[in-house]
Image 1 (tube, rainbow, N blue to C red):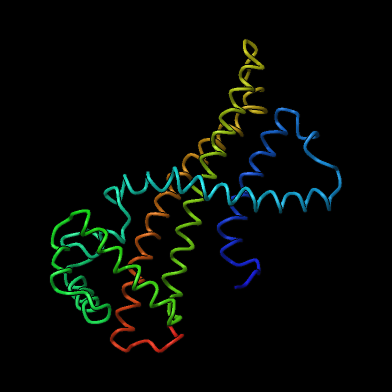
Image 2 (cartoon, rainbow, N blue to C red; image 1 turned 90 degrees about the horizontal axis):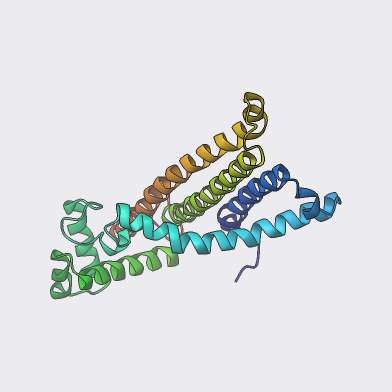
Amino acid sequence: MSNKFTYFDFICYFIPGAILIWSFILFTKSIGILAYLTTFNTFTDTLGFIIIAFVLGHFIQYKSKQIIEPKIKRKYWNEAFVSEQFMIKNNKFCDEIDRLKFLKMAMERFKYSQEELKKLDSNTEEARKLSHSIYRKAYSLINNAEINERATTANVYYNFFRGLSATCFCSALLFLVQSVIKILENWGACSWGFIKEDLLIPFLLMIFFFYLTSCFIDRARQRGELHVEQTFNSMYIYYLGGIKYGKQS
């Protein structure tokens, strides 16, 4: 097992963590407590930033899986993962022509019986489990055959956008709190100068990050669907003999 810092680590952990830290720095600076959180040593502060961003990124992914993923499933995926519906008849993720081809592949390659696959004609809990089981076998096979690049890349970006949506939501909340604090501090003495200097930027950043939250949720949805589609497409082409071991154009 490799212990190297990977592309996945950078994309899915460090970037979301770094963005949230940046938002937190702006927040603490605006309320005058940033000086208490820095050592004033460039090397130490930089090292601390990197470590905290990476650790925070893990926490963001953990919470996004708990909070953001159920929202995606509820809004777009009928309360289930795409892989749990992809092989079910009349689903919105896979054309029937392709589904029948994948069923044939599942029967011949993974030794499912016609009786078992018949369960996929109706959208039941058992059918969803069966659909996901076929997906898991297909994904394992393309990983073992080293033809998983497209499916894995889509999955990496699903995790990335899911984490970014949580990051942007938290950042928006920070700027919302910052705006409220500034309003309360200047209650009764609001002026256009105050709005321009102290309120306009955090208010615009709040709106911007709330907007990004919805954008990244939709991007996560797209990549999640693409991951399952690429898994089955790669598996099917490999099944037909169109992809050699370890190669995917």
